[in-house]
Image 1 (tube, rainbow, N blue to C red):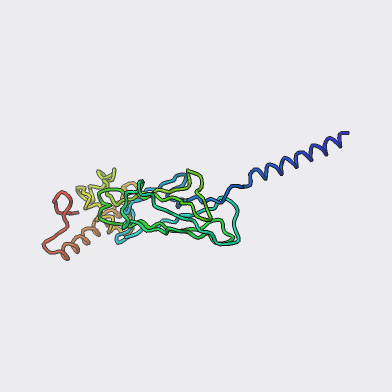
Image 2 (image 1 turned 180 degrees about the horizontal axis):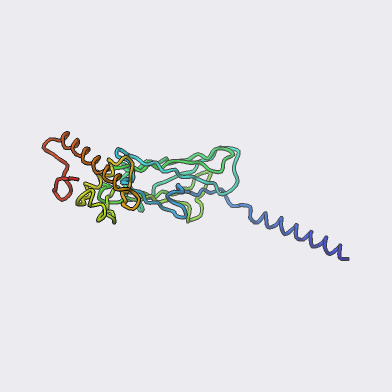
Length: 235
């Protein structure tokens, strides 16, 4: 009797397990969700980026975005549509580049495409926004509301470091122009910190900036580097 009860219970558990597996299997029509680069958008549907953190001469920043399938893979290529939502976008069309369609290859569950953010002088005074979203296609519908779009916010704005009082000994009075000059000629250093950098390192940077400034001024006779307050930049 006990054996019969055990067998019956096991059979019911097996049926329940099968039913549970089927319940979790995606039965809805194929959909696409957008996933931004993890370093920028982990746990979020937006990212914020500043060209200030890049090397001098950087004019573009490509951001990898994944178009991920919600549903089973297919034995043929499929196309997802990507659109710019104009009423949620403030960036002019010359400040970004992205494809309007993305191909998900046969047998694959995702494809990567790039949204290229571009640098321009207008970004030195304001941030701009680009909002992209999935547009229904013959192969895919939109994914869940939280993941059918991505927002990119970027600028090239300088802001005074909170530790400038400690840096003033080396670099003098602060100005946005001076700080941008430092970042552009620091060899990739994106912040200056008396707690993590030695006196010798900071002094060496000061000499580098002085020499580079001298070269700049020599190359621009009559127009030495002047900051936003009308003062000559010095170190």
